[in-house]
Image 1 (spheres, one colour):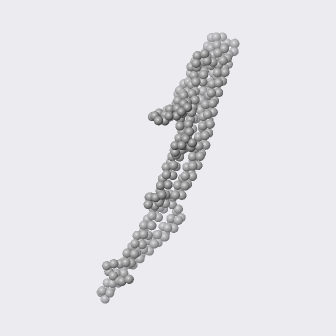
Image 2 (cartoon, rainbow, N blue to C red):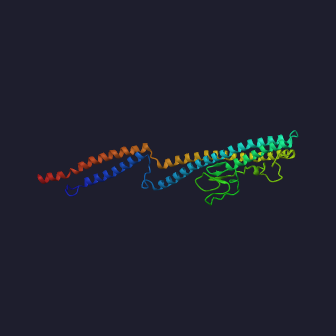
Image 3 (cartoon, one colour):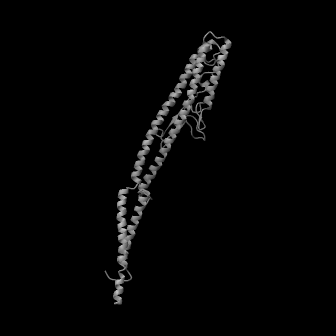
Length: 297
């Protein structure tokens, strides 16, 4: 290689190697400080796309877990109200049993019937007042066989959405709660005229009301049993979603996160190369002085 002043090939080579080593050192520093192997699309374009899709699924699944927990809270609210309805129906059957015997006068049966009707009115009040986040649960609002969510307010049975997609087989299912007013259960003055269970003001009506109240209790128990099954299903769904989110998080980590041990090895290597390149560049920059010595000699 010729000894020149205008062009220093050794310095240019050392500068290029320094630039490459410093760039690699900068990348390693960024990865180690962020904990991520992929910090921009330039690091791994395909990996970045896969990571972001996984992150979207993880976020939606975690929200699905919260949705399912909210649905469980709603079901527990409805079941708690039905437990109070159960107490009222038991008291109504007790009153019907009392009025069915012949040892009471007609006036006394009317007094017993007044409490019977008060229990029925309370059942209706509970059914109309029980709500969760503004959604009424026992007044027939959620008893519809079909769901329609196209309007501002959805109608029919309630859809609980927990999956990351919109497939009915795996991403959501419905909560349907029957009407629990006294008239729907067939007891109290709200029941259809002439129907057993409407009143216990006579001995015959009280006797007939016993079977009507039994039917009402069974109807109410069916609603509670359905709610209990739904709660168990939601709890199992939550467990599955949490496992799914955990596995997706692990897969996302494999793609996105930096291997600290491997990257630290690269960092040390590039750090040494950078320091070496700086030293060699310093030496290469001093080479043109040799030419000056020949000129001055």
